[in-house]
Amino acid sequence: MMGVDEAKFIQLTSNAADNVRNRSPQYSPDGKKVAFTSYNNEKVRSVVVPNYLGKYVVANPMNRSVAGDSISQPALGIVPAEGGAVLWVDFGTEKEFYIEDWWWSHDSSQILINKVSKCQKVREILLASASDGKTRLLDSEKDEKWMDSLSSFFDWAPDGKRILFTSERDGWSHIYLLFLDGGSSQQLTSGEFEVTNPRWSPDGSRIYFTSSQVSPYERHLYFIPSEGGSPTRLTNMPGVNNGVVSPDEKHILITHSNSTNPPELYLMENSPQATPVRVTRSPLSEFYSYDWIDYKIISFPSRADGKIIHARLYEPPGLDRNKKYPLVVFIHGAGYMQNVLKGWTYYSHEYFFNNLLAHNGYVVLDIDYRGSAGYGRDFRTDVYRYLGGLDLEDLISGVEHMVKKGYVDPERVGCYGGSYGGFLTLMALFNSPDTFRCGAALRPVTDWENYHSHYTTQRLNIPQSDAEAFKQSSPIHFAKNLKGHLLICHGVLDSNVHFQDTAQLVQKLIEYGKDFELMVYPKEGHSFRQPESWIDEYRRIERMFDTYLKR
Image (cartoon, rainbow, N blue to C red; front, side, top):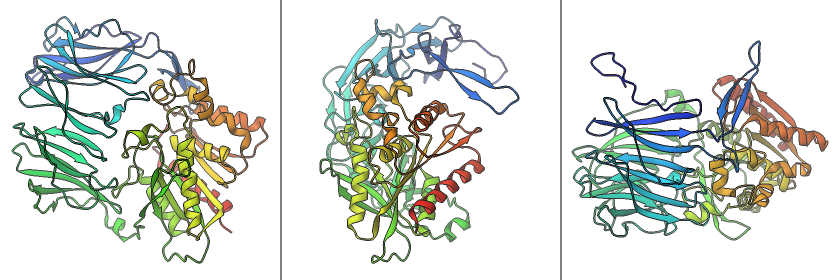
């Protein structure tokens, strides 16, 4: 810690070692204490990511728990801001679990903790005393598949007597209220839609939140009375809206985007009838001179079980429905995000590329396959124990839906995607080779036993007890089925999906006598940083589609 008025450093902790890392320090609101998380990696294996660009090969070690491994042992410490003994929060005898997040109370006397078990099927909300480190269980829930830590939100009430949190316990992400003096949680919102980012008003009389109540493709800002009641919608601009309420609650700052315009700031009065005033105009004038495709949002039933699947559809300008067009399926990454929105996409590079493809005569389909966020707990967890199962069926269903429209040529279908999208590209080419003529797998997972234990335990359990889940979900076991053209692109410095995955798959393809194309980027990690790398990658993908899908 360093003082503001003088360059004086005070060391607050002394437990750091080769295998111990202290992170995420936070002052208590009164400034008298600092809380931090500490991770003991003694039982976590050390791996390396080689760098080949210098005179000598260097490989810096990194801790990485892969499927079935031991994980870091977390701890939460509290230390006086002026230095002194560390008070460790008491989590009992359990050693391996996840501290997903934690928050100081307004009076600095307690810390709220979101704790998830190593198997990630149990979540506990704990309250820790900042004076003695003892914890008290406030709420616990279990999911037979896995808890969704990414959509968990918490907030202290201004009076310090209540907290709100989100949970999928009724099948959708909704707001729950919990009194700290005891009693069960109270559900404040309900319905077949998602609620995220709930926040108390400064006086505690309202709860503001973002919701998909209008449409799964839109997000709007709402509020409810703190004791519950019907939601009041505050934003009306079609698209994706996220808001921050001013401290005096008189105004709302909105971040708004739609299908052809990136996020901009708008200011409005805190009233449902208020008209937002645009504050920023970010893109250069050249951005508006381009003829951006105003994609359609379509839906269709999955051939596997009839569940409704949603997708963005980019069609070439001047589409002639009497002609046959090639189809490209873009497969978004992560496996858990939502990409089908009437708002600006997280995948801006791919949005630009999909526009380019459409202008060059391709129909492009961007599908929120099973596992994607935004459609409820069951949709999210349908991939449990079989990645590349129902999600791949959803992709094939999208192809079949477009073929039925009459203007897509079933013999000219390709796909591409990165990370989880690269994994699904491989599963598509290996397990449905008659559907997809070619595909580009970018930084793909090829064997889930190589990947992060946090992610794989959620979806596949551990290989020691569920080997079948890993085997049926890993493309490397189906490489012999490749018939179409495969392009693999991967950065050597990838510390997320290690280049190891591509190396192992390439060896299998060689052993099976398969033809394929490989492009290696020695300077790049999981997400490229060099413009020339992005350009090279997309030129190769475009060339592949032009070669194998155009006549």
